[in-house]
Length: 119
Image (cartoon, rainbow, N blue to C red; front, side, top):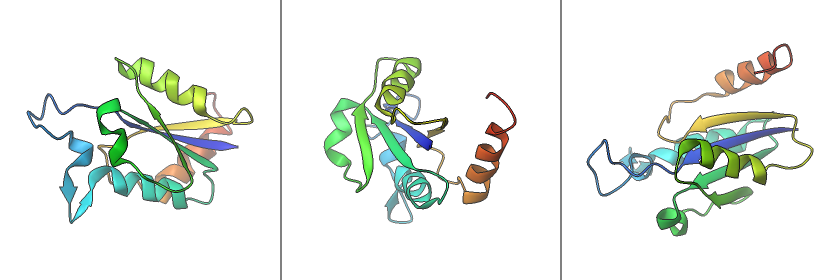
């Protein structure tokens, strides 16, 4: 079983924006929508776990995903996301939601490499 962990907990401090980068619009879609849609529709990804800052949880509504709050650091957020993955999960892909240009080919290649390497 393959899980995708999408980190959407950034606060936009470096961007100096009231709105975190992943929630900004790009071609009338939120930046994080691009990543979530790709992972949700990839035939090799069995579950999608979204880790989000508590202040922005109400903005998320994605059918077929698991949504949880993040921690104070990226490491804590990853751990919280990993703890929400299915117990039968064998591989996890961790993706930053502020990077909208992920493709099926990149996801599939990453999963293929996990069959030959530990990480």
